[in-house]
Length: 299
Image 1 (cartoon, one colour):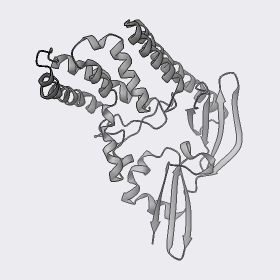
Image 2 (cartoon, rainbow, N blue to C red):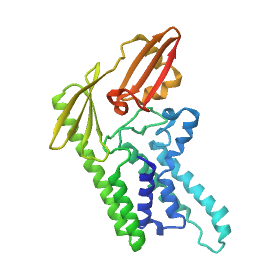
Image 3 (cartoon, rainbow, N blue to C red):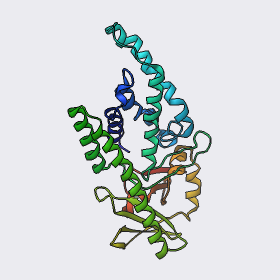
Image 4 (cartoon, one colour):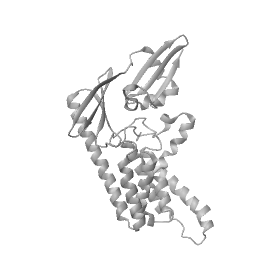
């Protein structure tokens, strides 16, 4: 999910009553809700898909990162806050650890809900897992969480924030159910094929559908009560060219190759060599364009 959603979840946990547990509780919860994204340091090194949503988002990280964050918060407390206000109540490390664990656990859980995926088993197994339940930026979650946090803060009453968190959990469960419903309905019409059923923005009850029939991706949409609408739009996978196998072995795209869920390829040959362009149809769509792409030039 986007970092605004993560931050709002941390703020809602704070306003729900957890901010009373110790000094720096609110900051710990909001930072913790974003803390696994420290792997963003991979981006400047060109290793985004190799590192992102991997080691810092897996089960092992959930056991280690809370200690790291709690230690950092206590260090800040001793070196900065208590020096500015010597008579202030020191932060309780045990409480900081508990709050860090709660907040950090929400991050990969929410990230798992969308089609991008999370590698729960890293650094031991480089495998992506997807729930396909929520769009990566969900307007309705923003409205619910902002409303709950603002109301709770102004009223100095935890119940609105608790209600917002309850709605969040119910909304996640509902959308997981809708996705599974869609998979079964589409699967009946396209038995034996691989499917990706992904949530749409705004219309969170509707799902984009991609059917992999072996050589071609077919695009459509599905929604409860309206059924399946296949638009007749297709995209050739293009994976039968010998250059594709060679390009997939290039170290520069190893992270992309592992991450792609609906890969397709375009091969262009000219006097300077062979250019293999690869993309992921779950984000590029039938146009084959977009950020979810990479290229390799072969001699």
